[in-house]
Length: 119
Image 1 (cartoon, rainbow, N blue to C red):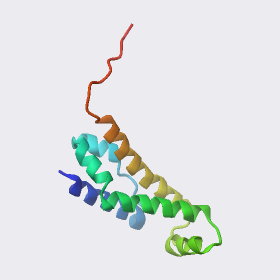
Image 2 (cartoon, rainbow, N blue to C red):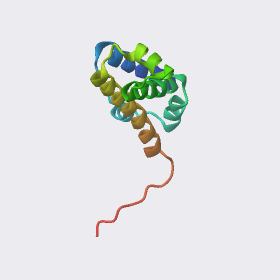
Image 3 (tube, one colour):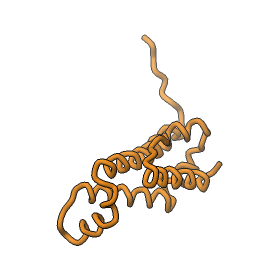
Image 4 (cartoon, one colour):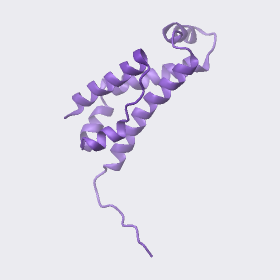
């Protein structure tokens, strides 16, 4: 599996969240169980898919914030069909996918792990 596979899986998770209201995908668990390498996750985080998810999260934040200027009107037009509770749920879900990726990348950092002493 590579970052292209990971991008495809995340795109499917986004589609499920937006179209079918299914938010069950756990990114960290998926990465860990499939033993993804750090460089694959880093590559994914720099991919157009991750950028698209970030943009969607930012757009949903603008929608939830509300407002009357031109930007907010466009966002309301794009995401108004969701409703604010559903938009909040989707935003949190997409944010968790990105934060799980960043956490996995951080956890897989090469080097020696510090030993915890049991005194």
